[in-house]
Length: 118
Image (tube, rainbow, N blue to C red; front, side, top):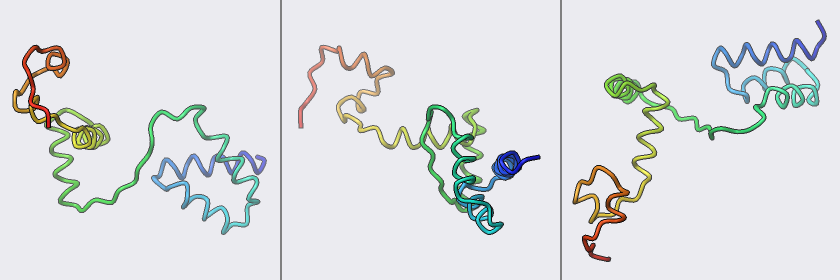
């Protein structure tokens, strides 16, 4: 096996085991792999287009357990549950619309009911 193939396999296996790219890069640097080879290997493993941004957070066991329980209740994966929580918390709510408790925000947009402006 050539060194490029070994490097690629090492990165793939390390990612499967949950190591971050930063940790993998550090380990390859410790083993004196050439920096241009490391960079080239990581670039070849990057997706052609980026679907989602990635954020890393550290959670306490209590919070993690609560999220797992909530995700299971909502029939979502952990990632989907966290994304749902973040999405819901970042949407600015129009107080007049939220007080009406409408099922569909589109209905509120075209409603004839006059809303109080701030």
